[in-house]
Length: 89
Image 1 (cartoon, rainbow, N blue to C red):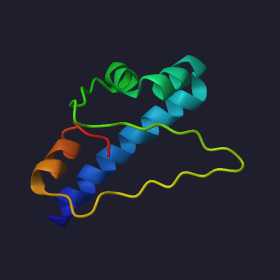
Image 2 (cartoon, rainbow, N blue to C red):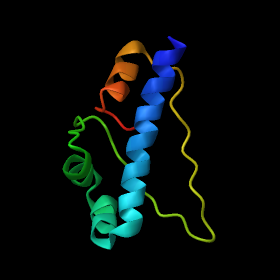
Image 3 (cartoon, rainbow, N blue to C red):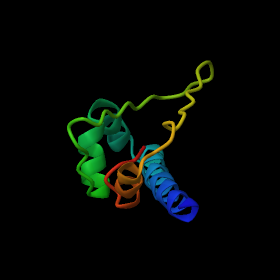
Image 4 (cartoon, rainbow, N blue to C red):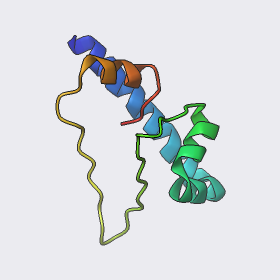
C-alpha cells in the first residue's frame, strides 16, 4: 500500500510541477489558472475535475507564503483517483 500511495502522490506532484512551470513561463496561462483553474487544468493536462472538487490557486509574494497541507488519511478510492490523474490534490 505504501508504494501505491507514494506513486499517487508523485503523480499529483508531477502535475502540480507542470502547471507551475507553465504558469511561470506563460503569463496568459497564469492568468487563466488564477481566474478559471478547472478550465486551465483541463486544457493543459487533459484532466476533467469533478464538480465537487474545488481548486484554489494563490500567488505568493514577498509578504505572503501559502502552505498546502495534504488531506488526512486518503482512502483507496482517493488514491486511485490521484494515480489516474483525476485529482491533483
